[in-house]
Amino acid sequence: MIRLCWKEMRLLDADVLAGDVARGEILRLVMPRRYQLAWLQLMTGATQDQPQQEAQIWLETPEITVDSSSRVFSQHVVYLLHQHGALANLSLRENLMLPFLYGGLSDEMARANDLLPEVAEWLDIGDALDAQVGERSSYMHALISLGRSVLMQPDIMVVQDAHVGMQAHQLQRLRILFGEALQRLGAGVLYLSSSAQDGMGIDFCRSLELAGELVGTEDM
Image 1 (tube, rainbow, N blue to C red):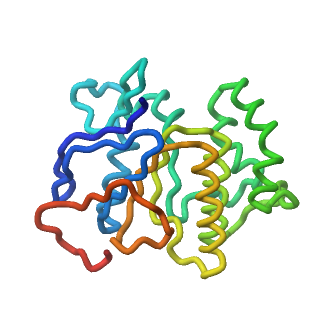
Image 2: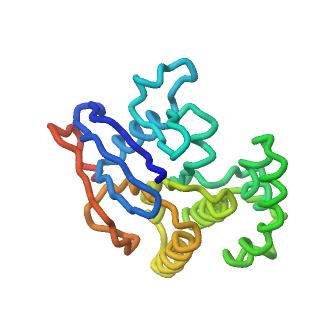
Image 3: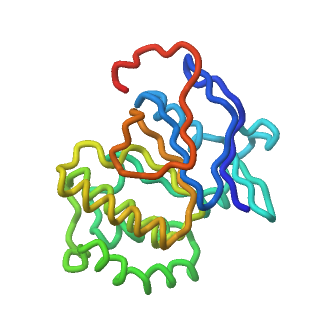
């Protein structure tokens, strides 16, 4: 079993209980936006020289346990974040292939490149793959992140309220695509949400909230 795990910790002025999400599970962690950013910084900001026993967030596989600074971690865990899917100066094709362009994994890049036309057609962006992204909507950011996730074939997805700011028809389409992606990948999901009212229509296995005194919760 592959699991994303974290120990009990203090996050800003609130407490996060120890927990985990396994491949195939969907867990919601409800926290205001600034706590989400602190959590994501903790996930992506670990240093290579951090002793494993001090890691607060780590990945367990049947073969190995690694913290979030490890390259193995980034191969198993991908992020679908609000308004952080695309680089404006790159084409759609380059954005979708970005993890492989700089990853140095030729076999994985060849596999992803073969799969790219199918994924682009699924996202309905096949005719625009070579167009520069430029300034795009929340919906396009989410599409690119979702397509990249399918190409990477992760075991765990970390999702941050990607639907915020979308029009109703875009949200409905994203819900369908997200559900299809999960069915295809079988990945586990850690869903960071600023509200207990779900906007993505997801059937969560479990839902957790921060404990302790929260300061500045008006953005929930």
